Structure formats: C-alpha cells, structure tokens
Image (cartoon, rainbow, N blue to C red):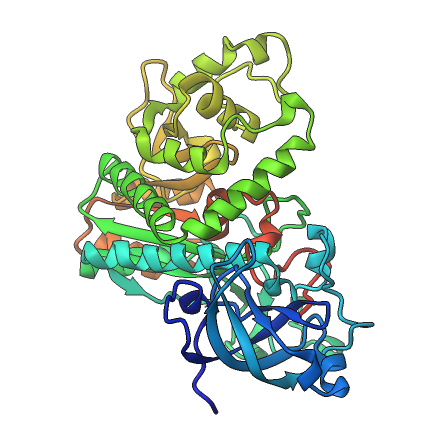
Length: 482
C-alpha cells in the first residue's frame, strides 16, 4: 500500500509543492470540488481540492459523507479561511463506499442520546474524537505516574469468589445449564458441578488481591475492568467500568492522601499539556451548552478553569465530623434547600453535600477523613473512639467540583484481632477470605490504598455530563449492545 501521511502532520507542514498521499473518511463534499477529509489523527480536517472535469462522474457520485478514500496530490498553501494548507489532488481512489441514504452521521449536529445508539460510529465525530484522545492520555499518564514512582503494575483477577465491597451486587460467572441446573438435596444450586466448583462472580474491585501483592512488593497498583450489578440508570453509574487501585505497604492515611492528590494533579496536568486542541474544543462545547441553561444552572467555571482550579489549590483536608458541623449550619441546610437534610452525626453524605463543601464553602478540592465505621467497609482501620465514644475509621474520600466523590480509600486494618472482630460484626465469612487474613498472620504491616473510577476521572477532565459518553461501549441495565 502507498505510504500515507497523517493529517495532523500535514496541517503543520510548510513543504509546499511536494506530493503527498492521505487516506481518511469524507466529512463533507462541496460543489463537486472540495472534500473535507479526516483520518482520526486529529479533530481538524484537511481540504482536498479536486478537478471534477478530470474525474469520471461515477467516481464523483461515490465521494459521499462517510466514504473512505485515498487522495494523492500536491500540498499547497491554502487561499481559503480556516486552514493553512490543502491538497490539490491529482488522483482519488475510493477505498470504501458509504450509502448517503443510510449513513446515520450526516454533517449536522446530533444529540448525545442519538450517538449512544450508534456507538460504533460516534468515534467519527469531533466530540468523541476529543473525548477518547483525552481518555487515552489519562490512561497513559496513570501508568507513567506509577512507573516513575517505582510501583509494580499488577493484573488482579476479573473472576473472583469474594465480594470485596460486601455489597452483594455482583454478576455471577457460571457454565451451568440454566434449563437443567443441578441442585443439592436442600434444593440450592449445586455449584460443585460448575466450572470452578464453587460460586464465582465478576470482580467489583482488585483491592484485596492488591493488598496481597503490596505485602511483597511494597507498592503496587491495579488498572483494570470492574463490574457492579447495580440496577442504576443514573448519569454516574455503569455496570462495567475501569478502576485504578494502588496499595502501599508501610503507609498511613496521610501518605494515602498525599499519593492521591499528587496523582490527580499529575494526570490532569498531563492532559492539559498533551491534549490542548481537544480540551479547547471541549471547553467551547461546554460553554455553548451552558448558554442553553437557566442562569442558576450554569457552571461557575469553564472546563479549562475547573482543571486549572484543581492544579492551583492544595486540597482541603478535614474530618467527617468537621464536615457535618459545617453542613448542619450551612444556609442550604438551614433553609431546607438540601434534598437530604443533615440533622445528625452518622449520616451518609450525598453528592449535594459534597459539592457544597467543594464549590461553595472551601472553593477547592476537599479530602474528607475519619468516617463513621457503620457506613464504611470492613477492611478500613479502626480509629480509637472519639471524645463522645463514637467509632470512626481511617477512611478518606476526595471530592471534586461538579462531580462530588472522585476517590475513595483508607488505611487498611492490619491488626488481625480487630479485622476478624469487624468481619464477625458484619457477617463476612472468614473461611472464604482465609488467604486475605494470612497477610495479617504473617508479617502484617500498616498499609493503605484507594480506588479511582477511571470513567469518573475522564468525565471530570472532558466536562461530559453522562458517564456513558466517556467509555467506548457502555454497559448499563437492559443494554449490552455492540
């Protein structure tokens, strides 16, 4: 095949008069003369100018929106507005036809809802070109951040027999015949005849296995798919998503908070430095969307201002108890403007409370610590009871503007007696987690970690408002298309 040049390189070139070949997809074809061509290397198109008098009519009819073509010609300085270069084509070849009557991505504005229905084609739009370029950059930055710090990348299992969260909302993995399911004498499903000879599920977290590795390597991270069978149709939930989960031995809650803050600032800066065109496009897109909203619903910051805001400020750190005090006396709570009013210690904070703390009270990202033990997971390290005898755990949540909780983590409970007692209280079977408890029996050490839902990070950095628009093929209740 002829060597082709990428459009992103040609748009910066000044090698006028040289012959080049580009291959891409037709965005528009005007006046039988001007082709706007895009090859995915950047959001911008390159203009290919053809002489329709020297091309057969049959070929001209096949240059339609969505068609794939190869064009060879001279790179020349553009006389038109909006681009500095264009290609004066001497040869055009159709690589793949596109029926203009059936191709759904016509050159007009399409709603995000419609584009979700054709997720296999939505990558060809500028919006999704930008979103997935930013997603790529963020994923690369995550790996680079941990590699630079000497972390070991661990692949934890997708199939597991444990429920790390204790939530019970998991997808079952089985090869049993649903029409002829083997049963035990008491009528329950006989998983001993299943592939793994026991009940297994898709993982909700790689944390527990990550802790095992941290007890040998010192510091590790996982970055892989996780699954939640939660019947939720909100703009913030997916059934399949990706998680970043570092675990660090000999680390406490303070170390954990600092690692998380450093990571967030690193990856946001990487995106700002390496996705300037994409973020400027998304910034403009968000500003135009905001103009359609009532004044009181408009964003306080532009997208780029929001990202700079997170880099410019040290994250505010305070305890859950201090946050409850602030929220109880806040105007929205006093005037009953919160949907969920804060009236007592022990309440589980909602997104509206988290966003108030970040956007109104502190006006910077916030790290909340030391939550009530009753609303947190079994593996979190128990603090000594406070002055009022209330039990808290060494947990932390990082809250961001516009989105609320971004990261959840904790110092882990390394004391075997405290951990087993907590598991008993929460009815978590110890025999199923014997391997996890072994890390507390043999060379236990203080350690800490956190989880970051990758799609939430992409959602924040791109300014998109629905999490289904930042993962290629979203999985949610009653939908597993593509």
